Amino acid sequence: MSFRTVEEQLERVLAQVRRHPPITVPLDQAHGRTLASDALAISAVPVFDNSAMDGFAVRFADVVGASPDHPVTLRVIADIPAGSDIDPALAPGEAARIMTGSPAPTDADAIVPFEDTAGGLADSLETAIVQHAPQTPGAHIRRAAEDTAVGDVVLTAGTLIGARQLGALASAGIAQVAVAPRPKVAIVSTGSELVAPGQPLRRGQIPESNSSLLAGLAVDAGAEIVLRRSVDDEGDGPAEAVAEARSRGADAIIFSGGVSAGAYEIVKQSLAGAMEFTKVAMQPGKPQGFGATDEGMLLFGLPGNPVSAAVSFEVFVRPALMRMQGRASVHRPRMLLPAGSDWRTPPGRRQYLPAVIDRTDPARPVVRPATKGGSGSHLSVGLGVAEVYAIIPAETEQVSAGDLIEVMEL
Ligand code: AMP
Ligand code: MG
Image (cartoon, rainbow, N blue to C red):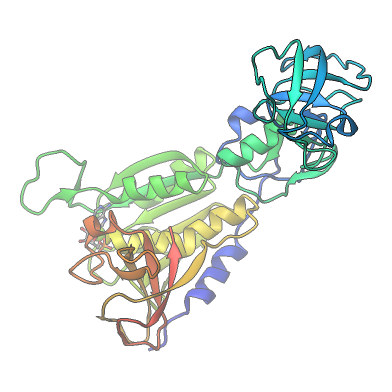
């Protein structure tokens, strides 16, 4: 029996992804979105030549010989607080008191910090007694545009806008950005055993957890949740959910459960015509359903075990949501780490094992399974402590401590 590879299945998924035209949003609505076009600086960074220190703006030639034994006394003829627009002329022997970020006078070509003068802040509006010469002309002056010039690319299309990116954009005078619309996602859990978390459980019932998991993962991936519901294993719940998701303009619907080989596989039964059900050479996550409607809504049928659903999301759904948003890379970053223990892996299937990074020796972090129980796809609490997925090739059957393991950062 030959299973489809992860790459073959992912290729089929990505081939169905459709993108919407970009929208323009103010910066305060841009957090977590993806830039749709290069963002160009409206103003330079820094905007103008300015002081990097609190001290005195001076003419370098005046103070070049200053030392503790031969201090140079300058007359202070102006005071330049932050926000000031003055540009005082400096004659030989003159200085201006200046604060960090204030515009450096055109006539000044160095800043002497207070700590290099005899008086410091005291008497700083009268004289500056310079005891240490600045190192070079231009010392402690931040030059206009040394970070970014007007019109320079601040961030490229496809960049995720996080906090640091918001800061960079704002500092370059950018008030609004073209971004990808948030993918609209519907989350549908299937199973007659499921009840809302916190509800009393009669024998046979369990708390429904996949919708919390999958909605959270989708939001983390930049999506907006437009529908969230559970359906039982009888009737036509999945097809009805598809109709509801479509009416809400969903770009993707994510089912969990009901796609494997049992007797009550409701997603398989209800959506047989709309989705393809297949087996992928991975563990967990072997049974996968996928399809797309005529309008381009993606239909994902993930297996129901919580770890299987989580891994399947990472492997197939997240890349699709990234592609929908035009993200520069659709994949999570990966790195190699030595294994910190031994574990067995299934033959013929690529393993995605929830794992933690043991940093006991910070110079040599190692990767360990997140749960003592190993790779069980039902170990949903173990998933809560996982920091990475260890990815073990299909050919490997045994991992030994010290083996270099590829891990997917989460
Ligand atoms: P299924 O893929 O429907 O056969 O489900 C596999 C296992 O995952 C079963 O033990 C289900 O009870 C469990 N499961 C399915 N869906 C959920 C869910 N939404 N929340 C928690 N467990 C689930
Ligand atoms: Mg089920």
